[in-house]
Picture (cartoon, rainbow, N blue to C red):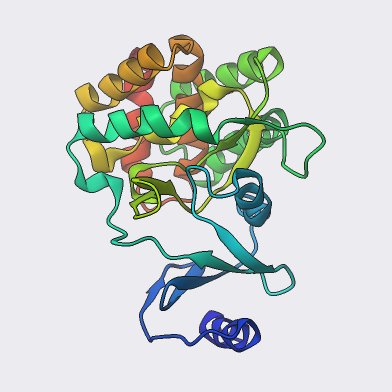
Length: 262
Protein backbone atom coordinates (compact mmCIF):
# COMPACT_ATOMS: atom_id res chain seq x y z
CA UNK A 1 0.00 0.00 0.00
CA UNK A 2 1.33 3.44 -0.90
CA UNK A 3 1.77 6.17 1.71
CA UNK A 4 -1.00 8.17 0.02
CA UNK A 5 -3.38 5.21 0.27
CA UNK A 6 -2.56 4.98 3.98
CA UNK A 7 -3.27 8.70 4.34
CA UNK A 8 -6.64 8.21 2.63
CA UNK A 9 -7.53 5.38 5.03
CA UNK A 10 -6.55 7.49 8.02
CA UNK A 11 -8.54 10.46 6.72
CA UNK A 12 -11.67 8.33 6.60
CA UNK A 13 -10.97 6.97 10.06
CA UNK A 14 -10.41 10.44 11.53
CA UNK A 15 -13.33 12.03 9.67
CA UNK A 16 -11.38 14.60 7.66
CA UNK A 17 -11.31 15.33 3.94
CA UNK A 18 -8.01 15.53 2.07
CA UNK A 19 -7.77 18.61 -0.13
CA UNK A 20 -5.28 17.16 -2.63
CA UNK A 21 -2.20 19.09 -1.52
CA UNK A 22 0.70 16.88 -0.48
CA UNK A 23 4.38 17.06 0.37
CA UNK A 24 6.31 13.89 -0.52
CA UNK A 25 9.80 12.91 0.60
CA UNK A 26 11.60 9.59 0.12
CA UNK A 27 10.38 8.38 3.53
CA UNK A 28 7.18 10.31 4.28
CA UNK A 29 4.06 11.94 2.95
CA UNK A 30 2.17 14.91 4.37
CA UNK A 31 -1.40 15.31 3.13
CA UNK A 32 -3.29 18.53 3.90
CA UNK A 33 -6.91 18.48 5.04
CA UNK A 34 -8.17 21.95 5.91
CA UNK A 35 -6.86 22.97 9.33
CA UNK A 36 -5.07 19.66 9.89
CA UNK A 37 -2.49 17.52 8.14
CA UNK A 38 -1.96 13.77 8.02
CA UNK A 39 1.64 12.61 8.12
CA UNK A 40 2.50 9.04 7.13
CA UNK A 41 6.06 7.76 7.13
CA UNK A 42 8.14 4.66 6.75
CA UNK A 43 9.46 3.35 10.04
CA UNK A 44 13.04 4.18 10.96
CA UNK A 45 15.05 4.49 14.16
CA UNK A 46 15.00 8.30 14.24
CA UNK A 47 11.23 8.79 13.92
CA UNK A 48 9.88 5.79 15.84
CA UNK A 49 8.89 7.93 18.87
CA UNK A 50 7.74 11.06 17.05
CA UNK A 51 4.22 10.83 18.48
CA UNK A 52 5.59 10.43 22.02
CA UNK A 53 7.70 13.57 21.63
CA UNK A 54 4.72 15.58 20.41
CA UNK A 55 2.67 14.33 23.35
CA UNK A 56 5.43 15.37 25.76
CA UNK A 57 5.59 18.87 24.29
CA UNK A 58 1.77 19.27 24.32
CA UNK A 59 1.95 22.02 21.73
CA UNK A 60 4.45 24.15 23.64
CA UNK A 61 6.86 25.24 20.95
CA UNK A 62 5.87 22.35 18.70
CA UNK A 63 3.00 21.38 16.44
CA UNK A 64 0.08 19.75 18.28
CA UNK A 65 -0.60 16.04 17.92
CA UNK A 66 -4.35 15.49 17.51
CA UNK A 67 -4.37 11.72 16.95
CA UNK A 68 -2.02 8.89 16.10
CA UNK A 69 -2.36 5.53 14.38
CA UNK A 70 0.69 3.67 15.63
CA UNK A 71 0.01 0.60 13.48
CA UNK A 72 0.02 2.67 10.28
CA UNK A 73 2.74 5.01 11.60
CA UNK A 74 0.45 7.95 10.85
CA UNK A 75 -0.17 11.21 12.70
CA UNK A 76 -2.99 13.75 12.63
CA UNK A 77 -1.43 17.16 13.29
CA UNK A 78 -2.50 20.77 13.53
CA UNK A 79 -1.69 22.76 10.42
CA UNK A 80 0.76 25.64 10.70
CA UNK A 81 -0.43 28.75 8.89
CA UNK A 82 1.12 30.36 6.93
CA UNK A 83 3.63 27.53 7.41
CA UNK A 84 6.66 29.31 5.99
CA UNK A 85 9.96 27.93 7.30
CA UNK A 86 12.32 29.69 9.68
CA UNK A 87 14.99 29.42 6.98
CA UNK A 88 13.32 32.30 5.13
CA UNK A 89 14.56 34.71 7.81
CA UNK A 90 18.04 36.25 7.84
CA UNK A 91 20.42 34.06 9.83
CA UNK A 92 20.58 36.20 12.97
CA UNK A 93 16.81 36.60 13.14
CA UNK A 94 16.44 32.82 12.81
CA UNK A 95 19.02 32.25 15.56
CA UNK A 96 17.09 34.61 17.81
CA UNK A 97 14.00 32.47 17.26
CA UNK A 98 15.97 29.32 18.10
CA UNK A 99 17.26 30.90 21.32
CA UNK A 100 13.67 31.41 22.40
CA UNK A 101 12.39 28.05 21.16
CA UNK A 102 15.01 25.56 22.34
CA UNK A 103 14.53 25.98 26.11
CA UNK A 104 10.82 25.29 25.65
CA UNK A 105 11.54 21.99 23.90
CA UNK A 106 14.20 20.80 26.36
CA UNK A 107 12.15 18.87 28.90
CA UNK A 108 13.51 16.57 31.62
CA UNK A 109 12.52 13.05 30.67
CA UNK A 110 12.98 9.98 32.85
CA UNK A 111 11.60 6.50 32.28
CA UNK A 112 10.28 7.45 28.84
CA UNK A 113 10.33 5.44 25.60
CA UNK A 114 12.94 7.73 24.03
CA UNK A 115 16.33 6.32 23.08
CA UNK A 116 19.22 7.67 25.18
CA UNK A 117 21.78 9.76 23.33
CA UNK A 118 24.48 7.53 24.83
CA UNK A 119 22.98 4.51 23.02
CA UNK A 120 22.73 6.43 19.77
CA UNK A 121 26.34 7.58 20.13
CA UNK A 122 27.43 3.96 20.61
CA UNK A 123 25.58 3.00 17.43
CA UNK A 124 27.27 5.84 15.50
CA UNK A 125 30.67 4.80 16.87
CA UNK A 126 30.06 1.27 15.56
CA UNK A 127 28.61 2.24 12.19
CA UNK A 128 30.87 5.16 11.24
CA UNK A 129 34.03 3.09 10.50
CA UNK A 130 31.98 0.50 8.63
CA UNK A 131 30.28 3.12 6.44
CA UNK A 132 33.61 4.85 5.88
CA UNK A 133 35.06 1.63 4.51
CA UNK A 134 31.95 0.76 2.46
CA UNK A 135 31.93 4.22 0.84
CA UNK A 136 35.56 3.90 -0.20
CA UNK A 137 37.00 6.15 2.53
CA UNK A 138 35.33 9.35 1.24
CA UNK A 139 37.13 11.64 3.69
CA UNK A 140 40.38 11.71 5.59
CA UNK A 141 41.03 9.33 8.48
CA UNK A 142 41.74 12.16 10.93
CA UNK A 143 38.14 13.38 10.53
CA UNK A 144 36.77 9.93 11.27
CA UNK A 145 39.05 9.62 14.30
CA UNK A 146 37.95 13.02 15.60
CA UNK A 147 34.28 11.99 15.42
CA UNK A 148 34.97 8.69 17.19
CA UNK A 149 37.00 10.46 19.90
CA UNK A 150 34.16 12.92 20.46
CA UNK A 151 31.60 10.14 20.80
CA UNK A 152 33.74 8.21 23.27
CA UNK A 153 34.48 11.29 25.39
CA UNK A 154 31.09 13.02 25.34
CA UNK A 155 28.60 10.17 25.74
CA UNK A 156 29.59 9.07 29.28
CA UNK A 157 30.15 12.61 30.63
CA UNK A 158 26.84 14.28 29.75
CA UNK A 159 25.00 16.81 31.83
CA UNK A 160 21.28 16.86 32.67
CA UNK A 161 19.25 14.59 30.42
CA UNK A 162 16.56 16.34 28.39
CA UNK A 163 14.22 15.55 25.53
CA UNK A 164 16.06 16.87 22.46
CA UNK A 165 15.06 17.12 18.80
CA UNK A 166 18.03 15.80 16.85
CA UNK A 167 16.85 17.20 13.51
CA UNK A 168 15.78 20.71 14.52
CA UNK A 169 17.14 22.62 11.54
CA UNK A 170 15.63 25.81 10.14
CA UNK A 171 13.32 24.03 7.68
CA UNK A 172 11.77 22.04 10.55
CA UNK A 173 10.44 25.16 12.28
CA UNK A 174 7.36 26.77 10.73
CA UNK A 175 5.62 30.10 11.20
CA UNK A 176 2.20 29.64 12.80
CA UNK A 177 -0.73 31.59 14.24
CA UNK A 178 -0.98 29.95 17.67
CA UNK A 179 2.68 30.70 18.36
CA UNK A 180 5.17 32.59 16.18
CA UNK A 181 7.19 29.43 15.44
CA UNK A 182 6.47 25.74 15.92
CA UNK A 183 8.85 22.80 15.60
CA UNK A 184 7.83 19.87 13.40
CA UNK A 185 9.21 16.46 12.45
CA UNK A 186 10.74 15.50 15.82
CA UNK A 187 13.43 12.84 15.87
CA UNK A 188 13.68 12.56 19.64
CA UNK A 189 16.49 11.45 21.89
CA UNK A 190 17.21 11.98 25.59
CA UNK A 191 20.56 13.67 26.07
CA UNK A 192 22.30 16.84 27.18
CA UNK A 193 21.33 20.25 25.86
CA UNK A 194 24.60 20.79 23.99
CA UNK A 195 23.70 17.97 21.60
CA UNK A 196 20.49 19.77 20.65
CA UNK A 197 22.49 22.47 18.85
CA UNK A 198 24.03 20.05 16.33
CA UNK A 199 21.34 20.26 13.61
CA UNK A 200 21.21 24.05 13.82
CA UNK A 201 24.98 24.43 13.61
CA UNK A 202 25.01 22.43 10.36
CA UNK A 203 21.79 24.08 9.10
CA UNK A 204 23.29 25.29 5.82
CA UNK A 205 19.98 26.83 4.76
CA UNK A 206 20.93 29.63 7.18
CA UNK A 207 24.30 30.07 5.47
CA UNK A 208 26.71 27.47 4.18
CA UNK A 209 30.08 29.15 4.64
CA UNK A 210 32.57 28.37 7.40
CA UNK A 211 31.94 31.72 9.08
CA UNK A 212 28.19 30.93 9.18
CA UNK A 213 28.69 27.53 10.80
CA UNK A 214 31.01 28.94 13.48
CA UNK A 215 28.76 31.96 14.04
CA UNK A 216 25.83 29.66 14.78
CA UNK A 217 27.95 27.61 17.18
CA UNK A 218 29.30 30.69 18.96
CA UNK A 219 26.05 32.60 19.27
CA UNK A 220 23.89 29.69 20.39
CA UNK A 221 26.35 28.45 23.01
CA UNK A 222 26.89 31.98 24.31
CA UNK A 223 23.25 33.03 24.56
CA UNK A 224 22.01 29.67 25.86
CA UNK A 225 24.99 29.43 28.26
CA UNK A 226 26.13 26.04 26.98
CA UNK A 227 29.57 24.44 26.75
CA UNK A 228 30.96 25.38 23.33
CA UNK A 229 33.47 22.52 23.17
CA UNK A 230 30.84 19.89 23.93
CA UNK A 231 28.42 21.38 21.42
CA UNK A 232 31.20 21.48 18.81
CA UNK A 233 32.06 17.81 19.41
CA UNK A 234 28.47 16.63 19.19
CA UNK A 235 27.87 18.66 16.03
CA UNK A 236 30.98 17.23 14.38
CA UNK A 237 30.13 13.64 15.29
CA UNK A 238 26.44 13.68 14.38
CA UNK A 239 27.01 15.63 11.17
CA UNK A 240 29.53 13.03 10.01
CA UNK A 241 27.36 10.11 11.17
CA UNK A 242 24.35 11.47 9.28
CA UNK A 243 26.35 12.31 6.16
CA UNK A 244 26.14 8.74 4.86
CA UNK A 245 22.34 8.80 4.63
CA UNK A 246 22.10 12.32 3.21
CA UNK A 247 22.04 13.71 -0.29
CA UNK A 248 24.20 16.49 1.15
CA UNK A 249 27.15 14.21 1.93
CA UNK A 250 29.90 16.57 0.63
CA UNK A 251 28.34 19.54 2.45
CA UNK A 252 28.14 17.66 5.74
CA UNK A 253 31.73 16.46 5.43
CA UNK A 254 32.96 20.00 4.78
CA UNK A 255 30.99 21.25 7.78
CA UNK A 256 32.61 18.56 9.93
CA UNK A 257 36.04 19.71 8.74
CA UNK A 258 35.28 23.28 9.80
CA UNK A 259 34.11 22.06 13.20
CA UNK A 260 37.28 20.03 13.64
CA UNK A 261 39.31 23.21 13.19
CA UNK A 262 37.01 25.47 15.25
